[in-house]
Amino acid sequence: MKQLKDFENVYFIGAGGIGMSAIARYFLAIGKEVAGYDRTATPLTSHLEEEGAHLHFEDNVDLIPCNMQDASRTLIVYTPAIPKDHNEWAYFREHGFTIMKRAQVLGLITRSSKGLCVAGTHGKTSTSTMAAHLLYQSSVGCTAFLGGVSQNYSSNLLLDTNSPYTVIEADEFDRSFHQLSPWMSVITSDDPDHLDIYGDEAHYKEAFSQYTQLIRPGGALIMHEGLTITPQVQEGVDIYTYGRTNGDFHATNERIGNGAIIIDFVGPDITIKDVELGVPVAINIDNGVAAMALAYMFFSVISQSSNIKGQPIGTGS
Image (cartoon, rainbow, N blue to C red; front, top):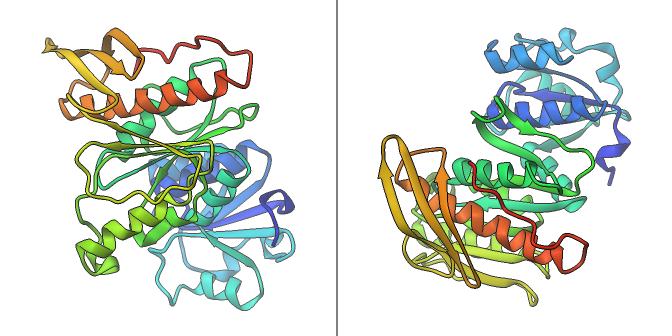
């Protein structure tokens, strides 16, 4: 099977989605030619065009750039939201192109890096964005594919080509997260969703259990306390819990007021006092604890195999 490095061009069917556009920007940043289709122009597609992507907004095979019509050099990335009768998608299928879902591309990226993934029905975007910030502003850096536009960076992509670490939302829709190869993962919640795909609550939660099997040995799983998911981790994967007031990682000494939330962050062998969350909504205490727990476990592991000692996890968000 070809790897991402084997393609010169990447063509997106549905380029303007928040997740798809982050991957498109990633490929632009690493020097790939990027083109694609979306149904309507948006600020996200405008930003892609400003960065060098060639986009159009009509389902028309004649509008596909000539250099994107070489199946040996062009990877096709599509969103499941594209209808089955889409003309361009049919063209690429009929002419032998390598075609991947967004989740498959993210899976390849996690296999070639160390993925820090955030799964769960709710809280994925906030938690992964805060975790990405903690790593990105540190000495080790990271690349992060965000499910929203971070206010800190005005972007849905953080890029550090020198860092082997990647932060990704592990989306359960269409079982997409089963394509990933996490090194460490948070699971924020397990409220049943997407039952048109899973059928019932039991199968939904079983999909999360299956996801935990994908975490690499030497990594960690950090679950919100009280979840009814049964972890099925491989040998060598440590399991921790977190919560607002309970769990291996939790908050104490909450102070909420004047547009700010300040907490003390508590872990198994650490307390960080006076952490101010930049997102003053109470649920983000849980999300902030999860992000700091993930960052703490990350730095704890890499400090054992590198010269990084006592690396701070930061207090911003």
